[in-house]
Image (cartoon, rainbow, N blue to C red; front, side, top):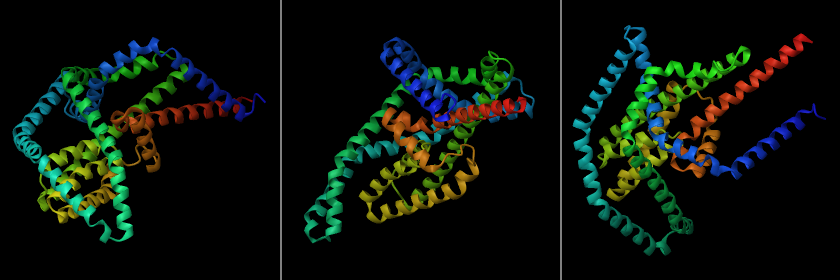
Length: 360
């Protein structure tokens, strides 16, 4: 019975459960470690994203134009400062104006929305039963939506505040990654020897490739979708177009769910301003998402992650319930890394079995 696969799998699951239970019972021992990790998480995450975005440029400068390491780093930092200056000098005044206008108009927006809901409620008896039932269900679920939205906004604001407080640490992590990123993997796989060393080396390379493809692809896809939405919103004359598209850029980094999260505020603003404009927002969102799913994502992301859409949605929902907005943002890349590790472990076990059969 000990050689039966089902017995080995069951024993492995039982041991994993016991290990998890053991760690949960002594979690106070690891609390200082959690505090340390939490304090460096934001600059490490931001520095890692910046590194994966700029690493292809660094590789191009060093291999094609023969830049030295520090010369390429200084060139990248100088280019980023120029881009920040352009963004601040060109976008910031327009963005500040839109934010100020939005804050000033929030009472009137909610007032107009409230008037529209009151009209629907007063004429509810004259509507078809199906429409009345849908309105009642919507009103009953408004509180749940409000709680969920408030929690999401609070999580986003908390992350923004943490990023602002730790902003000074991000350049240090970023520059250190650009300077010594080739040294990270050897320090890990050189601990091992023989076939294990080669396996760890290949696994680390696969993890790096997956993270690089995901970050670079998702940033590019988000930028393309935000630009397309901005063009569409300007055509229909939607207010706060730039502010909505900057929000869409960050939300589009969440696969599948992000674009629809970005759609809701644009739809609400269009609906309050003019119902026909809300319809145009729906059409623009539908067209942009079709362009994304049929042209942008397949050509930019390709098969780099090879994760089924249903799996992505499941991972996002589960990670969001566990870790909030951070889980929604990091759920897919963490799942992709775990998948790479599991596949490599399986392949290594298969090679060992085949080698053992050849010896026999």
